[in-house]
Length: 442
Ligand SMILES: [Mn+2]
Image 1 (tube, rainbow, N blue to C red):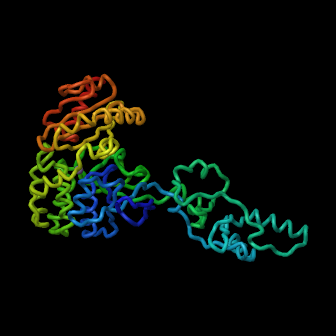
Image 2: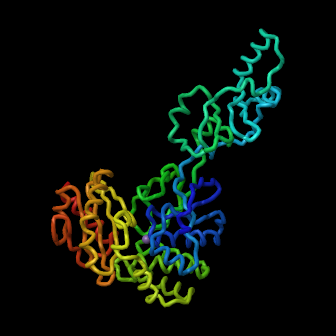
Image 3: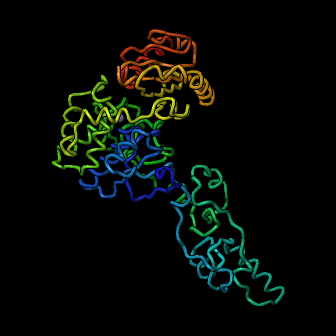
């Protein structure tokens, strides 16, 4: 499974990352690929598609169908020590002391010292030199090598987040620190003044605009653009940014429209992914979130990639494996979103099935796992919306504050299950209904 052979990657300050929400769905992945392509064509060559979670089975089906690699994984965008490391050349332990003295004299507080292979030993400091000089005077010995006067100085790991160490950085007397990688090899020197104002990752959010749904560390990044179709919950920005939130059926629709208005035809793979994003988010136009513009965009994209839109749509929806083939964690966390409603944190997961008969065998396990998350995440409500994509009907499993559960405006089937009828959209139908229920009991 090549998608999971992933390693931690540090962000680069010269790249603009086009990134979807956590636990990405097909629209979120498609939008990252499609919008990064669009930006690259329109004067932002530094735009790069990214994701902050694993592609779902459905998304992987679409990626394979259109021969596309998933966007690059970026799990955290907080500034790290690596981002401020100045690559001053180190001196080795066997070098004469004069190699370090000139550098101290020219204003460096610490001169990094490594073994010949680059492993960090410490640093030459003015204090270390003074001590060595005093010893030389009293014992009349020869001028020492660097290795004989090296001092231990405050050292940080390249990948550590600066924000996790702000207290130490502020309290310490020193103003320069050594930065080493996981294996202890030299990465650079960090200066306090730079640490207090590190560079920030540039993010263009697609398919979401709330920080609670964004990649970890987004609160320390610079949001330079938003393209979305969800409710507003965005953070304030320091400068004005391009910000598009348009209530159509998918973010992919907005990207297709951007391309058309600039007379740009995406390559077949990108067009196919954008089409997949529209079909997945609108449940092949059955969701009430569907807009006339989604049909138009899908029609155009279908032409670009020469595919029967409706036929492919059904194929895509059915590509998700049944409940029994999935783990409880995957069912619950595969597509779960968190909201602030009233004074409560509310988490709503969504899963698609091809028949409600799949539910009973899984119900107890799912409820138990929901109960764990309810406690661990201090939620007021956790809910799983189960949508039958064949009939367009949904059920809801929910646990949480009794007052919220009692206020839910749906037919209650049991203590923990509701019949939602033809409600199929979390965004347009379920989440607003839950929000109203919570406001009604405040
Ligand atoms: Mn979407």
